Structures are given as C-alpha cells and as structure tokens.
Image (cartoon, rainbow, N blue to C red; front, side, top):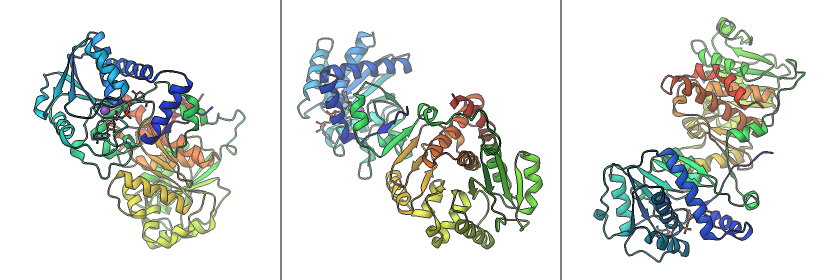
Length: 504
Ligand SMILES: NC(=O)C1=CN([C@@H]2O[C@H](COP(=O)(O)OP(=O)(O)OC[C@H]3O[C@@H](n4cnc5c(N)ncnc54)[C@H](O)[C@@H]3O)[C@@H](O)[C@H]2O)[C@H](O)CC1
Ligand SMILES: [K+]
C-alpha cells in the first residue's frame, strides 16, 4: 500500500496533535516527552562530539520541547545551559511543566538583552524559541536575540522549525529575524517552507522525525501537498512483466538535437534505453544519424528532412509517447514542426527545453496543450511561460495555477523538483543532490520520463517514479564519484543502478 507522505499547513498541526492525544490516548505532556526523546536521540546520532549545548527556550510548546531536550541531554552527560527570553508571555502548560522539571537539574538564565547571550567556543545552540505556532514576524528582544545567534560562529540546530520561519509563506517575513540553522530536526511532517531553495539558509539540512502521531488523523486531514521518497516509489513502481517482449514495453519517440547540438539527443536516448523502453525512435536532424547510431545503437534513427534541425515528423508511428524539445532550437521550421506535432499527436507528450521556449514565445500554442502533456521546465523556462515571481513560494503558486489552467502536468526542476497536477496537487521530490545541477541533466530526465510514458504508466505515477529515479541515479553517481565530478552522462549511465534499487 502506498504511504502518502503528506505536507500539512502548520495551522493544521494542532488538530493532528489533539486527535493523537485524545485517541492514542496519550497526555500532551507525554507526547512532548516522546518528541523530545526522539529529537535528542537523533541529535546525538548526528552530533557525536558535543562539548556542550545552549538551549534557548521560548514560552510555547516549542520551548517546552527545548526544556525537555535540555533535561534529556543533561541526563546523557552533555553539559547544558538554558536561556529564556525576558519579559515574554506566560509559558504554555506543557512548557511550564518541563521548565519546572528542568529546574530540578539546572538553572535558567534570563536574556534581558541580546548581549546577554554569550556563547562558549564549541557550544551548540539548540533553537527552541518558536515552532509551528509562530503567527507573525518576530520583533523586539526575540528578534535581537535571533540576530545575535545568527552572528555567532556557533553551530545552531533547530527544534521542529527554525524560529521565525513561517511554515508556508515567508513573503512578508523579515529575513534578519529568522534563525539560520545548520540542521533542523522536524516533527512528523516536513513544512512546505523546507522545500523551497530560498529557505535553505534558515533550515539547513533537515530530517523528519516520526513521533507517532495518529495514522487515522494523518490519513483524514486533507492536503494538496505531498513528498516522494524511496518507499513511495517502491510501492507504485509496477513489476517488470515476466513475459515481456519489446512491444509490451512500449514504443517512444524522442525529438531532440540540432546540428552541432546532438549531445542532448544522445543523453536523452541513453537514459530512455536504460529506463525500460521497448523501442526507442530518435527523431534527429539528417546530419545527426551517425552520432545517434554510434553512441546509442539501441535507438532507431528517424531522420528529419532537414539536415540541420527538427522541421516535421513525417511518419507518426503507433507511438505510446513522444518527448520533444532538448536542443531543437527555436527556428521557424522548428516552430512549425512543433505546432504540427501538437495538432496531430494527442497522446502522452513530454515537452522540454526549446519546446517550452517556443511555446513561451508563440503563446497561441498554449491552446494546443492537452491532458496528455507533461511540461518539464527549469526555473527560467517556467518564468518564460508564466512570468517572473518575487520568490519561490509565489512561483509555486503560479505553477499550480498554470497546471490547473492548461490541464497539464508540470515538473518544475530544482533542488526539490516539484510535480504539479491539473487538480492543483504538488508532489515534492526527495532524491538528488547539488552535483546534478549540470548541463544535460534535464535531457536525461526527459529520456527517463519518455521510457516510463511508453510503458503506459499513468502520468502522476510515472512522474513521481521518473523524477525520483533520476535523482537517485544522481545520488548513486555522487556516492561513488563525489558531487563535483557528477555529469549528465554519468547520471544516464547510472539509471540502471537506480532502477535496481527501486525494483522489488
Ligand atoms: N507536532 C506535534 O504534534 C507536536 C509539536 N510540539 C511542539 O509544539 C510546537 C508548537 O507549539 P505552539 O505552542 O503551538 O507554538 P510555539 O512553540 O511556536 O509558540 C508560539 C507562541 O508564541 C506566540 N507567538 C507566535 N508568534 C509570535 C511572535 N512573532 N512573537 C512573539 N510571540 C509569538 C504564540 O501565540 C504562541 O504562544 C511545535 O513547533 C513543536 O515544537 C510538541 O512538543 C510535540 C508534538
Ligand atoms: K525552533
């Protein structure tokens, strides 16, 4: 059974918490104790040599976690200092209980001004000022303390969410008053803000800790946001048919390359033939036949009448899917070729790179998009299609609106590539690494998606599987060769290894 990895709005979390407390049943204080225990264990697994920690605790439940973590770390022999911020509101009941429990082991120093926060060399700061209950930008003394924390050289680890960061929209937030953590260990669900590249400086590396919130309420709470992990993909990847022949594995057409730009076609084709396609046809400019035949002998060349570029697909065979765009250029014949293709072929169509640039320039082509279309833009290509955004959050909204308006699936490629569906759901991908941010990596993804589409998987499944597998192949490269040396050709080569890891 597929486990839906959900991302909730922070405003929904209290209800999930409450249901768990009522139905597990567990007291809220015990739930906090469990969360703090799991947090502490994970912290000590990652941070093996801790000279000492400084916990900065707020007055909400995030602060309550902080006092509990202080106690649990102290019990494990870690030297702990605890600070609270002067003059703020009353502590929540569970925060109060943990504050008192801590007082039996140590003292709480009050920060009356930012300068009172004096950190010793090597002390790790545990940020437990604000959590998911933050409902406005941080101001006043707490803001000055956060600035002081960010100015220090000490490492900072956040409890649940860096203090000051809103779980979703940070458009109106003050970047100066958000904690910049090196690590964030978050409870049960990643927050949407963690998925956006612009927040990496606050969140650092992050991990989700399962604190056992009630599965029934998790299943029942609605959301449009999900994330894809190895487990998701293993659950939805269909097994390879036992009695397969090349016909059952599907027939796909890759339209890519132009004279002097054949690399994109080669990379896409290599990735497709390593991703389970039965028969791959490569529509390339007339002069590109030899390149394809020598580099990807498995592919069948389908040369264009033009020697140098894509102008038209003369024969539309019984393809199961077509991918078009990598390095085709944007010349007038190519625009005509793309338009004709969109008018005559209404099956699964993956539109990438120059195909998207052409559509952005010739906006009447937008009307030819249909429900079988998958668009795979990177950020710049998406901006050409949908306009500029002030930040990643706004871009995400635009993405979802665009997919809905044109009834298409879109993969916005980036650190956490995100799939947008026509019904406005978003699926964030969890594989991949910065070493993959290299020319040609997108062409490889196009080939992977073409292969899966030819296998006749439904669009959402094929996108979740393909995007994850592509990232996983990049991770396989990085594991063996490092990130710097990772290049698109290596990702294509390692697709087989990624599939092996995902197949049951
Ligand atoms: N997810 C779970 O099931 C569990 C979560 N835990 C922890 O609880 C916090 C959320 O706790 P909550 O008390 O709701 O919120 P905060 O700790 O973030 O406290 C906010 C507190 O401060 C007030 N406030 C909000 N914004 C501001 C502001 N800008 N300036 C000043 N004050 C502000 C607000 O009114 C609240 O009173 C979650 O993150 C987890 O760490 C449980 O411990 C385990 C279960
Ligand atoms: K925090």
